[in-house]
Image (tube, rainbow, N blue to C red):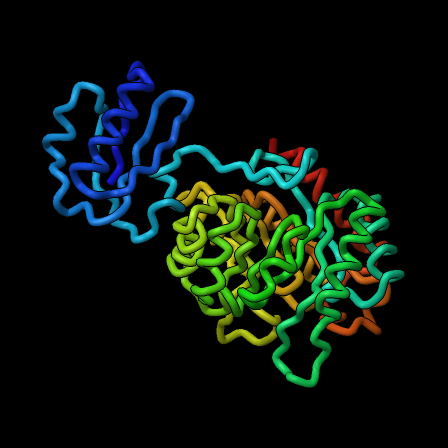
Length: 335
């Protein structure tokens, strides 16, 4: 249920009203203070809430029930875009374009530091790199694990770039304490135990859409994290599985404006995993920016033919440099 209060309502009166709702109806009240009004979102069993009584209060502008199962992720609860601060210089959702770039897998100190320096020079604002790698084949490279995280932190020290890396198990959360953005991969989008534990942190969480997940299922996974108390969720569209097998996945570019209409959370796009082909990264990335994406996550490797994972979809630093320049120019044209 959404309650919009009149702009002139004093803060102390708002608090008294919110406390009364909590006590009378045993619901949780989520408060959002906007520029022009204050919105109260009632979360819980609201079927006993008397809408007519609430609507009759002098401080209430309007009241309505919310039919969607996701509440905290719903734009009706939070009309303005959420801005997530990653570092002093990097925020996602504020209208800027943030580019996360780096290798699918961290392979060595020389590799990750070299790539980090090059993508930073080309305009990347975050460094991505996999330390733990969920692979379809049990015989494929599974990542350097904790050593990979240490190498990412070393690259961050060398370049100042915040780091993004994927978590796979709840037992690893303490290990990710010094990772700036924790990525939840497509295979773990509905690992609800993991999502609940991440909800207890205040870390920015990059939540990738599942291979065959609907938009509502994706938002419900975000709701799991937010229900635990962590509102720092970044949604990532990375392509979904369809009958088409020319590309690795099918990039659902329409998901960007749809999700931004339904939710206040920032949305980034992964054109690398969506296509599986390096030559498709540029047009898909451009389309994502044009569709309103808040950021991109792009795979870059200094030697793609010899990459230990996903070399076919990885750009060289030189290719990334040219594409990043075009993306920045496109973003400027759209403002």
